[in-house]
Length: 114
Ligand SMILES: [Zn+2]
Image (tube, rainbow, N blue to C red; front, side, top):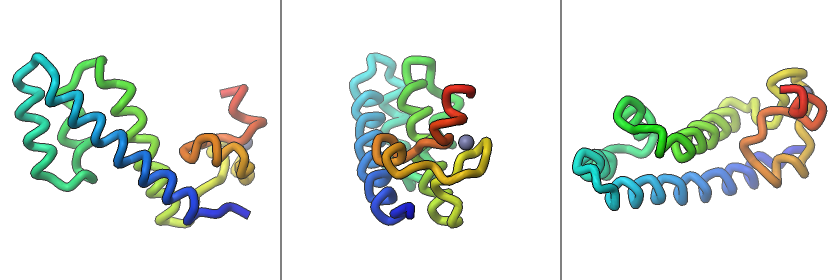
């Protein structure tokens, strides 16, 4: 049995951390454009951040952006009731795996092959 509410809490906690990390990184960048982007983000709903940042950030932000995408995708799957299923074989992903990474998209059988 997948405890979606528990994982939703995990996801939201990490989302907050990653968003804060993005703001901090932007604000401390030596690129002034990043400072104004941080200001723009602060004025907007966090759900729009990916859209706002996508075309403006270089590869040094790739890890943060990818993680944001994964987290938001998982939250979205919980919303539509499709959370916790392997995207390859559609079997349930075991809870140990989801505890380790609540954004896991593949079961233990498919992950090594992907
Ligand atoms: Zn699978």
